[in-house]
Amino acid sequence: MDKRKMGPRPDVSPKEQVKLLGRIIKYTFSHYKFSCICVVVCILVQAVTTLVGMLFIQSLIDDYIKPMIAAKSTDFTPLAFAMLRLAIVYVVGLAASYAYNRIMVNVGQGTLRNFRNDLFTNMEKLPIKYFDTHQHGDIMSVYTNDIDTFRQFICQSIPQVINCGTTVIISLVSMLIMSIPMTILAVGMAAVMLVVTKKIAAKSGKYFGKQQHDLGEVDGFIEEMLDGQKVVKVFCHEQEAIDDFVKINDNLRNSAYKANKYANILMPINANIGNISYVLCALLGAVLATNGFGGLTLGTIVSFCTLNKNFTNPISQLSQQMTFVIMASAGAKRLFDLMDQKPEHDDGYVELVNAEIDENGNITEVDHRTGKWAWKHPHKADGTVSYKRQEGGIVFDGVDFGYTDEKMVLHDIKLYAKPGQKIAFVGSTGAGKTTITNLINRFYDIQDGKIRYDEININKIKKPELRKSLGIVLQETNLFTGTVMDNIRYGKLDATDEECIAAAKLANADSFIRRLPDGYQTMLTGDGANLSQGQRQLLSIARAAVADPPVLILDEATSSIDTRTEKLVQAGMDALMHGRTTFVIAHRLSTVRNSDCIMVLEQGRIIERGTHDELIEKKGKYYSLYTGNFSEETA
Image (tube, rainbow, N blue to C red):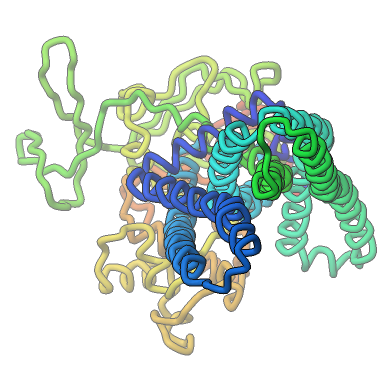
């Protein structure tokens, strides 16, 4: 199983819960201010209409039923008009309830959409290091499971909390007006409910946080198994994979069981405490009425007991909502942990611009593509701007680098690549070949030394501008859902169909593309699963070719291509590399024989450098690799 870092287990303290949920509410209100105000107004209207209906019980008994019984009257006209007025009040309450529920659907789904947009936007700005150290399935769990917990919270829990809070306050005021002693008893029983809710919710919250974490682990494992099904089948690892899944799935089941075990008993307990409160208030009311205390009437007692239900029921309902509140806070922690990740730092100010260069070497910036580039270098000291032709010279001067400060990967790397040169890196696995190319495009920043691009410190160049000048073909290809043409055009979004076809021909991909069912319009899905590995690599090379970059980085770009295809591709690659500075990481040493300089790396140090013939004459590490000892190279 992938041992990359999972998302932090969201054990959220009550204080942090309030902070996180407040942040969700603030986020929602900032986008839907008017809608939220309308919802609150509708909830208040609904709560008031409900209260009017309950207070009507007192009037019904004391003002209509008892007088009619005493007078032995059968005239129901006054009562009918009273019931008609009450019906109108209930219709208003029903309309208010319908309105706020409809509004909350729009607010809830819109907020989820905004959350996903903001989350994805921030994720695209994160450094590569974040994705190297966090499991992708766990990140996906944030987009799906954690954000989905907000839907219940925003659409139901928030309106329910407002509704219940309003109902409790209105009911409490009404009860105080009716009878202070009975109100004190009702408040005491409500306090018992709150204490029980707090204790049970604390236990439930602990396991809801673990449930979200375990859910992320399950998602991550499934994603890993989907990506590695061929390996699982080849090594007959199906049963081991099943056993591993059962273990982490059992962890999820256990945490979910414990979380819901406490959550599900909360509402029944509070409901029964509410029933006890109802009975005690009825008894106390009867005692007070029979002793003539406070002038309590039968209608007042019945109405008060109904209000008491209306007072305790919201507390019971709130206890049920605590389940969703706790889940939302656990999900919010994971979501905001991702959303609050610091974007990739970029303090560069040098830009790469299209340029026209006259016969005297004078550079003029233009707004259209000319095939020539220049570095636009603003000088803060005097406010002037200078231009330097982009040529592709790269220099490493005493570079030290480690993915952590405790363990250095590269040591005192010194190299230079003149414009147009082909530089090759060879060495055993883990020697640092790919790491060097990752430093050129600033996927990572170095601990010591300098890297200069056309004599400009790359820290001064804006990262997008730096990467725009680099064409990269990786050993691991990534194709996206879309047509073949779309995937080639990914290297240059404004490329014409003719440019994409020319790039495919350069990479010798045109012939196989035309044999596809719909040619260049053939749809690719599942990372190009309907293509062979070699065909996918050819498209990746064509994608780099259409970008027409000044500098190329080829990370074992032909390793997945058969020998016959490699000869075709190599011819196209040679044409692509002509006049461009190129860095090649080679799996097959035969592909780097014509390099201007070959760097041999071992344990993060350059131990040999020179042309193929020079290194063969030295009979060192390169010689042993080239003449037959490939054990380290292919390990």
